[in-house]
Image (cartoon, rainbow, N blue to C red):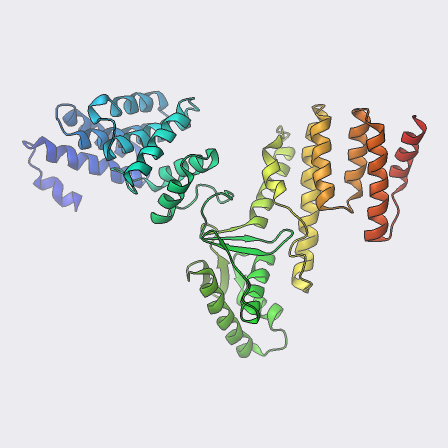
Length: 424
């Protein structure tokens, strides 16, 4: 349409020409064609600077600033947003809302201290006016700004409504606070939260569909062969009967979750949509994997991995005993303990003994039979000269191992205990 429009534009009508170039720039931004976006925005700006049209002014400067920022030209992008938010656009209305959003995006990229204030002003204005759109709508940018607002507690109710109404996808699939259509918790509990409401058990009718969901997650949740799912859930049924049972359970599960699109079946493989379904075990594994990767690169490890580790609240689907869950349960437990040790080592190397002790205490609360954590906690208390607490930790370990594993502490831990007793 715009290609046909180009031939018909009357360049003696500057508003029409400015709108045409502005639309070209917006479409280029949408398609991540930043050089083209800059070229068209500059043509539009040469016209709108001479016009009284505020909307054309804001649209042109907004797409221009975004394209400059995406091209790494942050100083020029900031200058563009400063001009876009000029007093001529007024203090309220959709023009102001749009200009503030694009200004906030540039400030975010620059780690500018004005970013939180600008973001707050933008979303507060949007809430007061009930705005669910802006003059130049760029979904990826809006997702980034919404995620930042949720993390900072800025206009949370309004931002969640904006996300849901525009079906914005999260910029990062690990953001638990995003208003996901569905959140699933499997570590230490099994809970399904749909549009912010916890799914209440309705008895036997839900049992098979939810078992299907559990098995799907236990097997990885992505591109799982239907034959593998039917083998786990209906091992006694013959091929066609098992497949029919699978289809019925899948239909019921989709109804429970509220959408057909959340679970895809393609080429005989089943996938939970990771952009619409948040699963705690996925976020946990990515956090631990990221920590291990940083360790392998000898990159510094800090407490930014703690939120990911804290997702592990206990054994994976601890109430289930099927063969399909056991391997995943053991693997995830090992990953959790490995992640704790990686972070604990980093804290200890920096001499942050109290922080390391707190970390190990949390780990013991979740995995009370993890002897290595007791050993590490005792050594931290030694460093902190808290001998009495270290002795209490040993006795706690002794009790936990006896009750849970019918075992005794290892020789290393017993030797450390004797050392503590004799150091009085």
